[in-house]
Length: 133
Image (cartoon, rainbow, N blue to C red; front, side, top):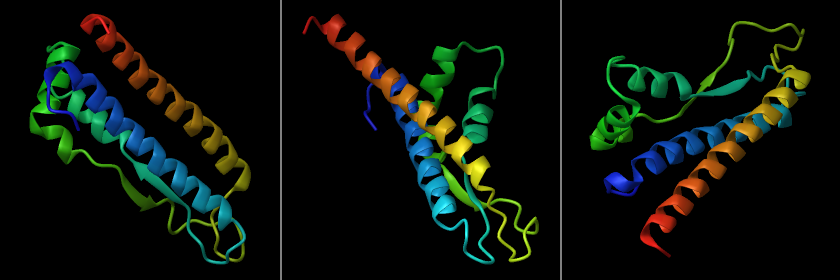
């Protein structure tokens, strides 16, 4: 994380990209274990924590919310892996991975990750333009 107000949005985008990367790994793990008896699907929780932190005060600008997050609260918002529908399985072997759903989730998450990386790159391009480099 970069400690400067110039990079506040970059820090938030970086945290979101970390969450998307973790979700990508969890989905890949799910796909790899689609035929493992008893395996339970994994997912990553991050967006809800970030949304909750940003909506804490709905009468404050997004800039103020991002600045507030970068004043120490952003480090407390971390993606976490959890087991999804642990008691649910539509298969006799106890596995609850739907390979078609995982492939859709993987494609969706890859698009999200690419958009986040592109946004980070654009922010750095804007910073370079302001600095005249």
